Length: 82
Image 1 (spheres, rainbow, N blue to C red):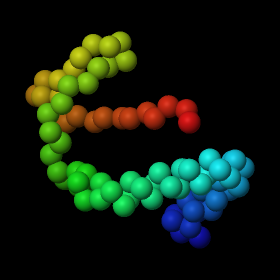
Image 2 (cartoon, rainbow, N blue to C red):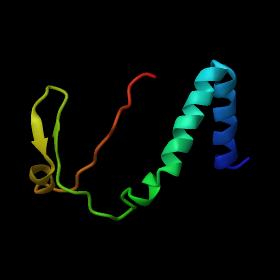
Image 3 (cartoon, rainbow, N blue to C red):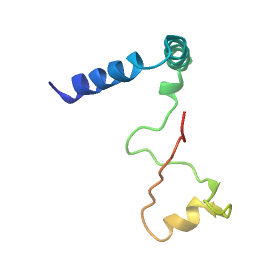
């Protein structure tokens, strides 16, 4: 079983334990995003991200330009608990 098949099996297993209405809503939201054309507008591997300012965990605002002056920058996004 390759990785794609393993991930599909894991997704099916998770969805089988969830409320079917929630699963339907999540699939509809995903389909709506795909249909919106958003994938054509996202950054591709190797693209340079625009400069941005974000708040850190303490609420202090940080500018990406300042951090990039020190070297490569890696961002990690945490979506929280759904």
